[in-house]
Length: 133
Image 1: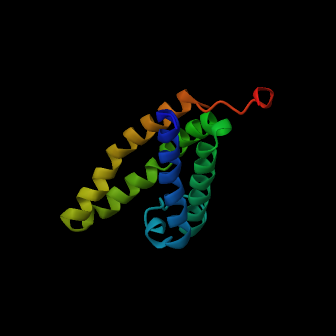
Image 2: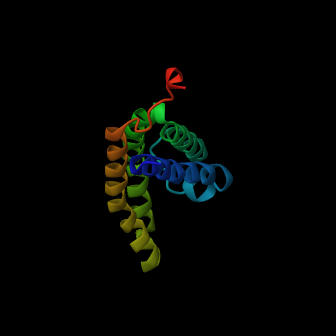
Image 3: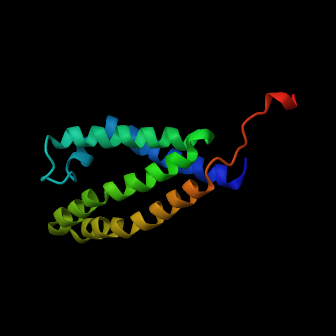
């Protein structure tokens, strides 16, 4: 497996794990949903989990990898307000929680850059050519 493929599959694994966590343990995610969004926090928790799962699937399949990379860029950008909301809410907690809350914000940058790298590499595994067999 080429390095670009491994990079895309690793990002798919990260997002797929997050998607599963949104479904099986939604409570922590509910607490960071910005309150100004319409609807319930649980709706947004599940919706973001579905989005993460869809992006993970797109990243895992070579033919949709480029689109998946761009979708990951959009997803990581879209969830940034939730991370800001969490940092602000955790500002009243113990120092370790404040550090986690604020420390997550700069982590969005490498996630977005990782997604851009995958998007730009696109489909790195050539499709099977039935004429060659």
